[in-house]
Amino acid sequence: MTDAPEPDDYPDPLAEVLEQAKALARPDKAVIYIFRPLLTTKADLDWTEFYARQRAHALGLRVARVLAVDNSNQDRMGMLCRLLRQLDCAVVITPSLAHVGGNPRRVTAFAELQTVDPAQCHHWRTRVPRYELDEALALETQDHSDAQASEGGAYSDSIQDIMTQRR
Image (cartoon, rainbow, N blue to C red; front, side, top):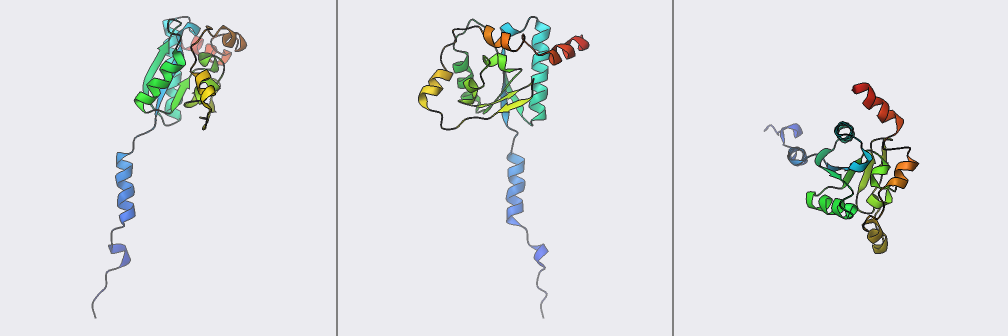
């Protein structure tokens, strides 16, 4: 009688494929979006970027690019959308909703939005009508002053307190 090989002696083809996929897999990428006029100093910008990077790390995302824009470009959402497509990203991380004009729908028309303070996820909306996408990408005519006023300033008190303690 011949000894038949045990079932454990055969390699599992599915396990090999999974191991290869894990080796090739890379973490998802994100773009950090900061609207600079909401920040008063270079230190504020540095801390804002630091906290956004921490949020990305907590979500298991790799930061592909930091986009800090000012009032000189009115096509901020269009620029963000083009950058996301160029980098093949689907996630935007921003310090607060004030940085995107107070309305998450401006970003969720073309990507997922994660905010740092408060830590929230605004999911990417699928099947967005063309007119709504056009509205989201429309040129900016306001300077975020209404969003800044509604949130009580550039940051909430919790981030302001943390930044003051660190200095």
